[in-house]
Length: 243
Image (cartoon, rainbow, N blue to C red):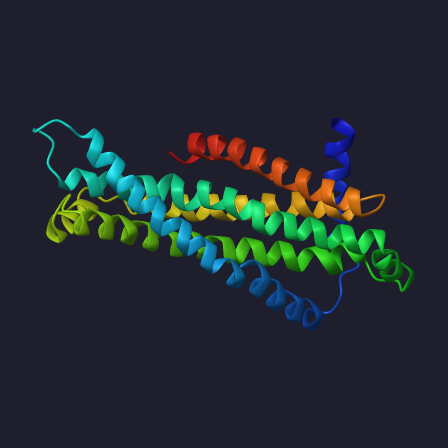
């Protein structure tokens, strides 16, 4: 375990030595932002809207006391979306999409000796291939979390108003009631950390793939499972530190 951790941190350190020019990284950074961020908007939107809608319906179904006002439904939906659903749950979904893609891409490059060819040309392959992915992840994941916040609350609004659970005025009042702006900071920080974990763990698993096509699939699976475990552990630690 310690040897794996040491190898992982040495891998992270290798990303910042013998770097290429800014122009090279900028072009690769934009490409990775499109692959990691823009191409994930659709799945994020679908999941966020339905999670917000289901949360609204389930909360209303369990608020059976006549002493609890209806606007509490949207109040709870807002806090659940901001603190957990838009960051933790969304990043677990993205770990499956983005993490497996990164590990599969780097693993394929390793077994086809493309990474070895870069090293022969004197290029730091870890920095050239992984650093743009890491930067793109830590930039786009918070943006996806913000988008997920809006769509999750919007999904709760549609479910709540269209089914007659509560009026539009009650829903708007509920999401404004006792609002704590600091919760937005928590969601953004969580998404930033989770993006870092997914990008680095998936890159590590893919970069050190050995064997053939079977091992590439195993690396992708390991990248997703390890990223999900890291996200859950980090979620608990961040909850303790930030709240």
